[in-house]
Length: 319
Image 1 (cartoon, rainbow, N blue to C red):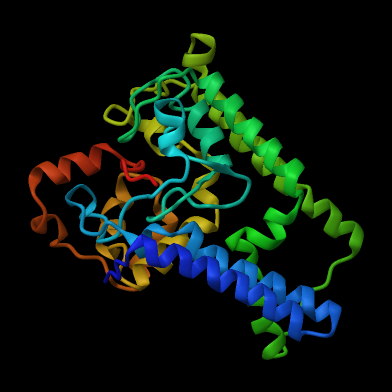
Image 2 (image 1 turned 180 degrees about the vertical axis):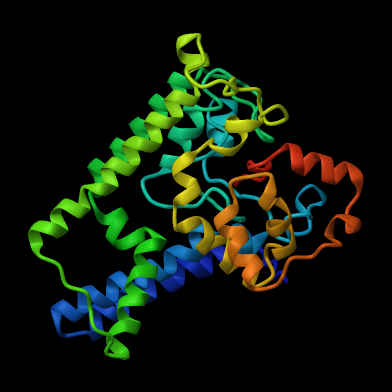
């Protein structure tokens, strides 16, 4: 399934819808509290097509990415401007899942993990070439994240992050069906909230441990010498970007795109045994969409390429 539309129509249309929606909400809603709530929901919804603009304007059916589905791998803002120094495009401080198709921006947490391991000092990425060292890439990510945080504060989490929309939808469903909410004390809630920082710290520390050979010149764990996209195996092939393995946005985005035919269920299921896509693969397998004959439908060269290049990186589609 694809709906390739001209960029010169889609982009102005999105701008017009955004401006008109904001105007109508501010003009017609009298209650200030409801006004803010509706405006926030509208912004969250309109951000989705902007963040996945490639799913609307293509190009579709690119031979390189056909084993994954009809949609383009990515359409990254800023990739042309940054070039090989920063080929993964504009960094954002919210969950813009790297593993889904059609992205225009890149999750800063994914970049921090990937630039520590396996790309701290390895130039050849998955369809990307890095011309600067890992510490420089990490510095650029941190600078962009700090700049965005200073300018917009927590607005990214509450108003832009698609996971916030998902949580709000669940809340509306709970209220509509009068499901009881599990209540905990404010003190317990504050303590639980700190777990997010522990999870982030653990993911970054694990990335440093995996990248110990590149950073410190010795392997803390045997089998973690980075070898680029065609040479990763063992721990290095299964644990790169560790937070992404458990991030809820990964299966949500992939399942959503698979459900409308923009990614292939069969492809995601096929790579379950060779990559940390296990969460997403589980969702595909329980829908009984695993295709045992899938590999017979693509060429041996394509099979070899994709098995050696997981997780897949962006293609050279930029605007």
